[in-house]
Length: 356
Image (cartoon, rainbow, N blue to C red; front, top):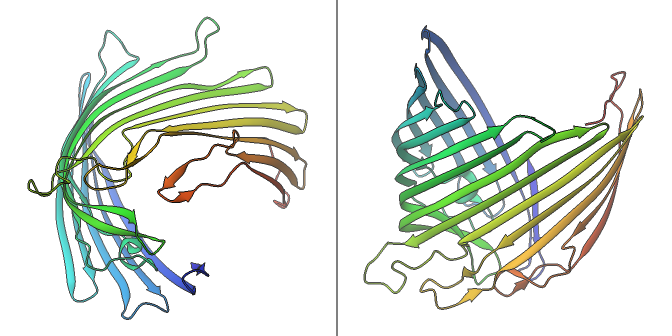
């Protein structure tokens, strides 16, 4: 992959190239009725070349994992374990063992309800971008580790008496993380990752979705998502940032998506509306300064014509529909209302094309 980064204000115009190779294998065996074991081995090699890199940018990864599934009536046990090994530049290496246990319960008296829970160790090494992205990558990053647990409910309903199929999910979680990798804006105009030594994250996630519903040749869908996240810095009890919210981490996030598609012979027409509310985000470590909440809405209107030999598509995309003034990063206003037109054509050979 080749990527060019140009910033005339910083007098930067560089092109970087990355190469990656992977080989993944696994074996799955049915030990007995309701008892399954899956063992896998993942291998990967990644390399990068960039004018600003003073040394070799490469890494080698080997991961061995085992996943089990044991059905005990309405209860399903899901144990797993993973061993990761990373070989990095400067003769560095990372090894991590991550056990995990999950359970799913489907009560016999309510087949449309699932109760779920999970606990285990988390591990996330610095990615290739975390270490080598230019500008901003940090070679000295430590891997992110932690323990966490969560529990929740999944409830769904089938089409019945004219009501569409739907699903709703609720999850409560809590994580204790060491050396969390967080990207933050710098004074030089770009983002760079750092390690936050201690982080406590707890929260609540919920979603409600009306599955794609057809009425004749009209297809509609609705999806609502809400996140409540309380992420606090617990690195140093003597610092002003202790027990304060992490920078640029919103406590409340609400997303809504509405969509409709209609087919008329070889034509397909549709409209999608995406809206997101983001609450206040603190921009200083001690929580003394913040950015206000904002609501942003995007819309897409699209049409396509399918034939035996080609598919023509046209769409109009409007971003920031209500022309709101808001900042994701302090000091950088997001663009005003943007209107974009896109025209596309595909020639799939002799294969027939159908509307999505």
